[in-house]
Image 1 (tube, rainbow, N blue to C red):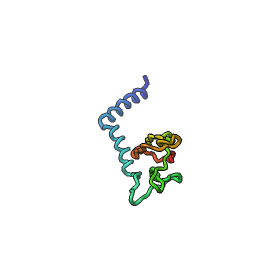
Image 2 (spheres, rainbow, N blue to C red):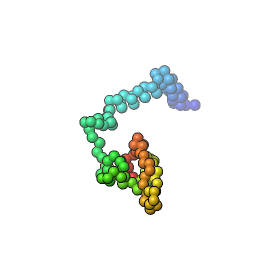
Image 3 (tube, rainbow, N blue to C red):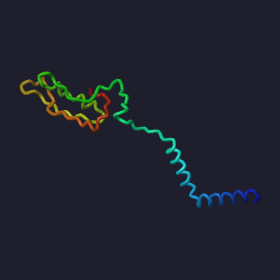
Image 4 (cartoon, rainbow, N blue to C red):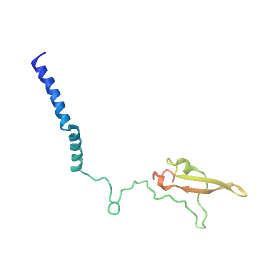
Length: 122
């Protein structure tokens, strides 16, 4: 075995021992933490003061529209329920008594906490 090989083997063992004694991994982790702390850039918008830029196809909050006489515009076709990717809308449709060709939404509910505001339902 050469002299240089012996020294490199001892040096590797010595550096491993120094890393063990000085908690090298913890120091490297703390260095990463401190660099993120020093170069901090906030991601959150401060809502009342900063407004988010809305996409061009945004149409506002979902609502069940009505005619001037108070009847609902929904005909109970269930297309909005089928198009919704997050299953926000639940429509229960029924036929108008005496007129089998006319339909209406007997129950129409939206869980806005699950809405993605994708605009597919409108």
